[in-house]
Length: 82
Image 1: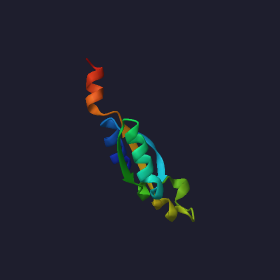
Image 2: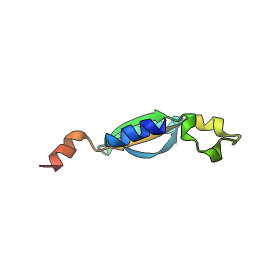
Image 3: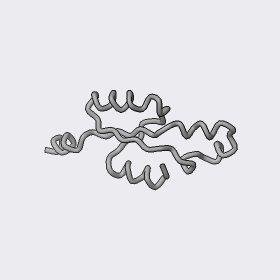
Image 4: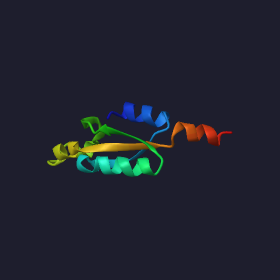
């Protein structure tokens, strides 16, 4: 996930929620879907890590995480504008 991709998703109405361990992603996607949100995920890439993380010995394990984004379904957004 590059900063550029993050900006593109946010411009399309997606809200960046948090990073989650891949072992929990299915459960979290299901939860947000049941709450009525559209959900998408993106892998974390080295560009996501700040300079403070570059020398971290456990940075490799951070690749086990994905970013979760949600947004209100576009049909509902359109209905609210009426």
